[in-house]
Length: 104
Image (cartoon, rainbow, N blue to C red; front, side, top):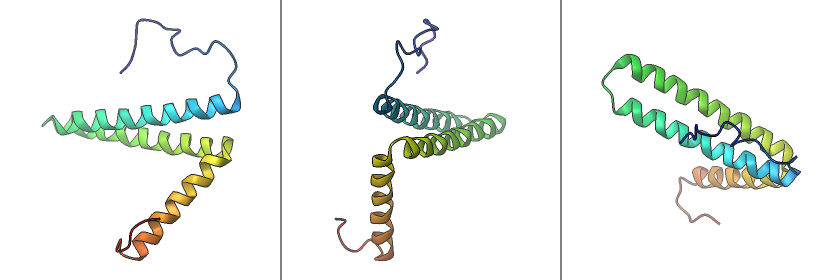
C-alpha cells in the first residue's frame, strides 16, 4: 500500500552497505509480488474488459520488474544466486521424477 503523506519516506538516511542493499532488493521484490496480486485481484473483480486488459498488462510489467530485481540481487549477492539455483535444481529433479519422491 502506498504511503503518500511523506514524500521522503523512501529516502535512505545513509548509503547502504552491500548486505543492506541486498535486503532492500528482497523487500522490493516482495513489493512487486504484492502489486501483481493486487492488479490481478482487481482484474478478477471487474467485468470491464478494458480494465481487465490494462490491469493484466500492468501485472505482467511487474513480473518483469521481479525478474530484473532478482537478476540484480543475484549479481550483488552470490549467496542468493547459489541458493536460488539450488532451489531450481531441486524442483527440476522432482519434476523429472514426476514429483514421486520427497524433496531433500
